[in-house]
Image (cartoon, rainbow, N blue to C red; front, side):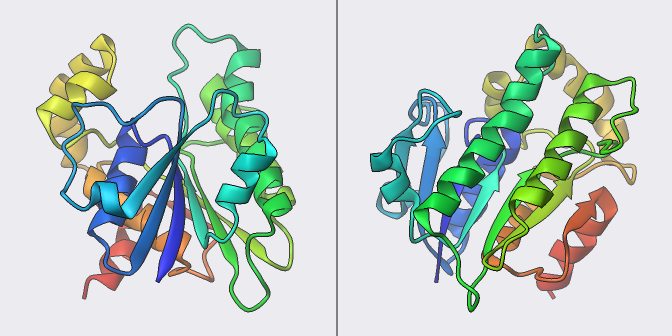
Length: 241
């Protein structure tokens, strides 16, 4: 049985991972790190209250001792916390997408997660086009790429591992979720471009992404450190046979 941590559970990727974890009988406990409680629009299964708990984090750059004690004794983490680049400066974007996950990793290491017999897997949600070289003209690509590089260094320990997921285009499966998880522009793009992209190799069902993230955090892909859109679909589907 696995005990998992999930961040960003009110967003598309994080919510998909949360639903996948709730549906997975091999996941016994889910700890959500959130800025606020799971909203009322979230259509959750009946086992949500028994299987999961929420820790409210006001500042993801620091973790007090009482939080560190609560995130100990977990087997993996899905880091899906993020924010659209709209309206953010480069400094703000880097803080959310680089500094926050690095702070979480340090807190997890302080909590003593993982062992040489059972590694702790930290799954980071990046994106197709992430650029670790930092040469991209797109801020989001540089930010995600920098996070991948820094997290790989921070998690290169005898007891922890990093798995980077680089999904392509994905969006909420249900209209109600889309109304609450996407901005106005995002909803328009989903409606107009969604059917086209979804039918291409860059499309990715949210359920597949969520399932992959949970399997990754459980340690189902011990020899994989990075999976692009096509690879993560293939890896997840290979477990369904």
